Length: 460
Image (tube, rainbow, N blue to C red):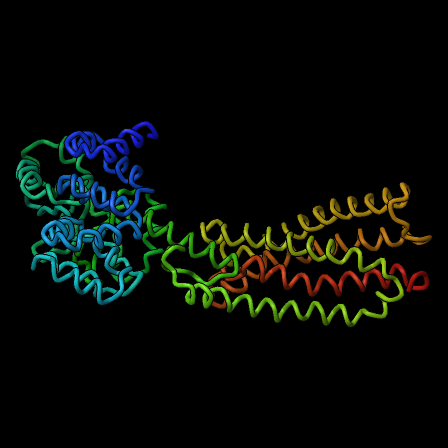
């Protein structure tokens, strides 16, 4: 790929447009999209002007939203070319592009659409945001149950060129109510004189146009389909959703969950397109909450000021103790949130998870506790640091505290996502910083309580 990129770049520098156009004809759309990924905007527009209308449409659909905006902006002076590109796009891809644009921009671009494409786009944009209606395309092939296989094949040849996919053919009645869907190979392998109704088993899976897009992601994953029909509440076939659009939704949802888990509100635009003030607003809320929560840590330290003044050595292990609890909590939270998202776990599994995390927390805590005690032993015996005559009890305090705090961290990190899901909130909001902050505060209380038990009458 680098060799091709270098060759094309050289052709651009040499202004050898004829050879460049010939080179582009022999490349797949996704290859061209990869090649122009890091090109300057001027070269990006140049590439599109050399592509055929069909190539331009297919390459455009492989670009990121930011690159698509650059292309549209660069074509503004060439109205005919821009109009052709917008009308050639598949309705679902065009809708996805328009809904990410500012309202005024999308309205201006919609005026360039033909009457037919304008009506389709308006209809799709009329469905609720994040609904399956926004994903679907009306470009599919449907046949009637009374068609013979031969007539059905003739119908497919006549109307199939504009279809999003021909893997599945849909069977509808006179009112366009969905009766069944049939894989194309079943039709091809059937006898020409057979009726389409003979191939139907009336067992099909469909999506509701008003359902959330996450429903489509789950159904596609469960049934391993390349396309699914979309119906209204009466069962009327309105369009289809293809697997490539569902993959885009899944990627978007994963990105949003990842942002939430990092302590940031979901960001709709890419990092490079988000205004500075919008970025600050998205991040400030959680930072303020976490900062106020961490102030409780300072309050907890103040509460144990007397113990610390008597045994300053205890303060040396505070970062070690609270970070271990926070890390174990973040680990548990990430595992459970992902399992909930993949439907591997459900609310009813909370007790199973708690039992498992109790044993996991005890074992992990024991491992860290042993390491902590050995560290104190080595430092004491080697003379690197003198913990005093009660160093064994200090080591035991640290070890036991680690066991309890890691146990508490794993239980908190695993149970909070269940609690949030139970009350109807997104489990992803149980972000790593939130869990870590919670365990920080409670970890201090556990640490100094344990130290008080073991060191009372000795250092305290």
